[in-house]
Amino acid sequence: MLHRVLKRAGLPKVRFHDLRHTFATLALQNGVDIKTVSGMLGHYSAGFTLDTYTHVTTSAKREAANTMGGILSGALR
Image 1 (cartoon, helix red, strand yellow):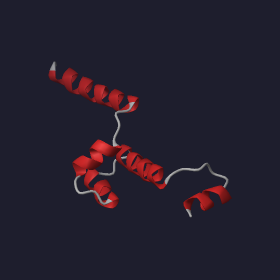
Image 2 (image 1 turned 90 degrees about the vertical axis):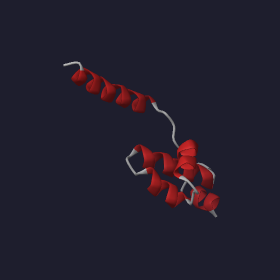
Image 3 (image 1 turned 90 degrees about the horizontal axis):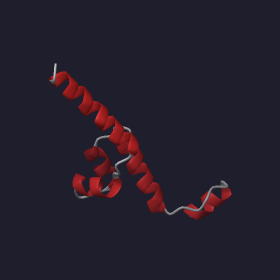
Image 4 (image 1 turned 45 degrees about the horizontal axis):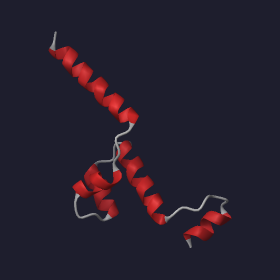
């Protein structure tokens, strides 16, 4: 049924799992807490969700570096 809906909408063919993966990744990247996402996906643990659906992105690395830079520069004053 998913493929029929996508075809009628003129969208590319994707698997249901691809939509699930996109949902989880976007939710986590936009601040939805891991326990909530894990529960919505029906996972047995938040650790499984983290291992499966999170990816270290360039922007996440940059944000972490900026955060640590701010912490360390404050600590050196």
